[in-house]
Amino acid sequence: MTTYTLSKGAAEKTKADVVAIGVVRTAKGLQAAPGGRGVADAYGRKFAPLLSTLGFTGKRGEVAKLPTGGTIKSPMLVLVGLGAEDDVDAAGLRRAAGIAIRTVSNAATLALALPARDAAEVRAVAEGAMLGAYAFTTYKTSSRSTPPGDVVVLTGTARSKAAKTALETAQAVASATALARDWVNTPAADLTPGRFADAVLAEHKSRKPGKVTISVLDEKELGSRGFGGVLGVGQASANPPRLVRLEYRPRGATAHLALVGKGITFDSGGLALKAGPKMRTMKCDMAGAAAVVAATFAIAELGLPVRVTTVAPMAENMVSGKATRPGDVLTMYDGQTVEVLNPDAEGRLVLADGIALAREAKPDLVVDVATLTGASETALGDRVGAVLGNDDDLLAQTIAAASRAGEVLWQLPIAEEMPEKVRTYSKVADLMQHNVDFYGGALYAAAFLQQFVGDHRWAHLDIAGPAFNGRGPYGHVPSGGTGFAVPTLVELASELADGKA
Ligand code: BES
Ligand code: ZN
Ligand code: ZN
Image (cartoon, rainbow, N blue to C red; front, side, top):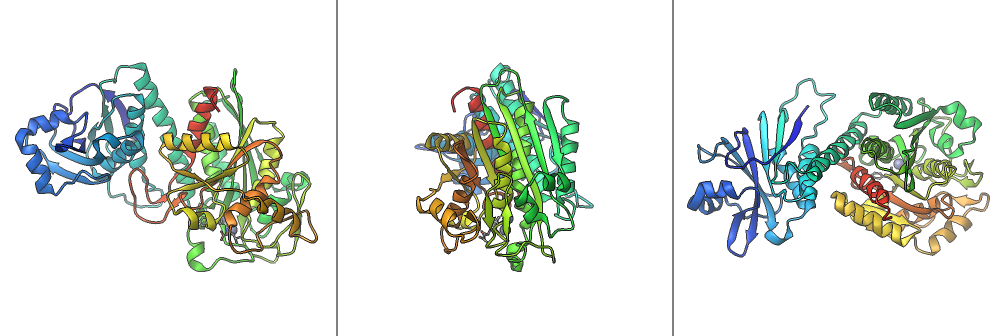
């Protein structure tokens, strides 16, 4: 466990094993960023030639590590590029802190002397380090590097209430993000729907009693209550489905937010079996459920005055003699019937039931999060999430919240022909599950979900791209599960708490 503290101390005087400072590009050439200027002063006229010898250009993401040879108190210096002086923002600082901590191996103490001039920057630096230090080691019999035991964020604001609150917020958001990452990274054999639900119960138990209430529906209850979508998707698996419901009801709540997350613990594609390479990462298909559950715990931990109702339908999409076939008709929880066309388009079926259940609590707005369509990844790549919905103000607010939280969402439209297709394609049922046409898969999927939303204000986050990083780490984002959407959901809730959304 790493301990994070704030200190007013100067970068050149800290005795930490490693000190990290930022480097910015300015009209006068490369300079140490605020927070690290004392270090540059200690090097004096040697600072610029040193950067030049390192080949340092100051671009974002650039990093160098060098022994200080007594020039400053700390024996090791990490330099992180922050880009142009005027472009330094919280998102850039979050990434830079993540890079800094990933550069450090086996140091007991790290001092972060990046710009931390106000609470937002303090939060970004602390959160970036916490997120960047993440490692999933559950299945490693020996681990190669250990994160620092103590991380000190150097800031002139160290003693202010706002800075302390910022550190607490960073801690809640980062630990919730790590929780979501852990669940995504856990092999599907060890995170079946039953075990995922048990893991949420265990997490609930480990937290402060009374803040959040939890209930779990098993396959029998799902059957007797008519959750046809969840059951239809889960019926071929030896591991039966579950549905987890969380409720956080603080006194004086200003708004009521419903969160719904796709919890497919493994997506083989069902009878539309995925080909090898596409199936490899499909343990990540419960990332939406992981994000909404983890965010709910963080919102409660922070005591935000927002009521939250969270629904996470969990199922494993497998193949067997009991699998749902193309042409089968499912009767969903809200009574609408759906013709299944492609058993690999399973996410919308479990989400539809989840959304219908969440609506019973009469929320002011509904946000669902899902690794829903490969089409969204095709459109936006693997670092940007898609957002679609039925309320332009809510969409703008969600995108803005993401941006403040250090994530990128981009709006896609629910083009007007899409709902029409969903309602008219099937000759036998009310709705057609999947697009008959090849293109526009992310739009069609959202239009399908919309049939279950009614007139609630609703935003749908398709995180098929950014939920899982199949390549090397970047910024504060590790390989594997990223915890994408957790920071955005907490930020959105805190905006609702301020009565702004
Ligand atoms: N879980 C996938 C979507 C996905 C793709 C998530 C890539 C993460 C990374 C989803 O259930 C799926 O299989 N979608 C299909 C839909 C199609 C069969 C209608 C897709 O997008 O290919
Ligand atoms: Zn699928
Ligand atoms: Zn899926």
